[in-house]
Length: 340
Image (cartoon, rainbow, N blue to C red; front, side):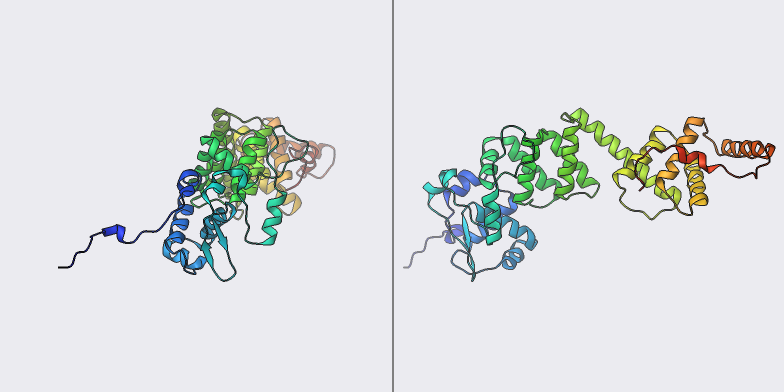
């Protein structure tokens, strides 16, 4: 009689370095953990990024970002002929100061060497982004930092790169935006299609300068931004402009015309037509000057515009001048310093 153990799922097992559970299970994202588990399962076999992407139904760019995390922590190495898991000694990985950072290219190595930890006090010039070691330490020490990085991945629906995470940490520690405020900023940026980190960093610096450091202040800011963006889209529709993502200046002007001065669609269209008649094209600055003049003159209805025009013609007729629309008056005032 022959005997056989029914091992079930245990008939096919593979080793997982303890450091992945002990240290990185809290720091790594879901995609990063999927990638390293697949690589460990296929240890000793040559495979490529496309192989991993196909097996996990992931985009190749996300696979590369995930692999970069494990490369920089020293868990895997990349060879010219293959990509192989190469866990290093447990005692080496248990000490963050002993982790040898590795990069795929020489250029990446040079970049890592130039990175420095964020200084405790704000300097005159913006510091370099924090390096991976400092980033990992902060995520391990402060659960709110780990939550910020996880939230960023969830908001954008992808694994944010190490560089993006370093930018977020710099914004938090150097510019002073609290985690909850920064998450609100990320949500707003993504909602308006501005998910690139350069835009987010620029906006975050602006928020810091405005001292938007509470949820209440952030909510008010987002409400103003949303109002300005909606107003700008409304102006595009009124003047028949091609629909596009409005600039900050366009949003500021539209917010003033609609939300502060409370001009109707008819009045904005009238100002637009006056501008085009006088200049041959739409000039936002010039149109804004017309609306500003009407605002201070108490003109709120198209009928009042006609009355004002008739009065000017009558006044000029008395002194023998040809009756014309006196657009020069609108050139003397402006709500903006630059023409869009």
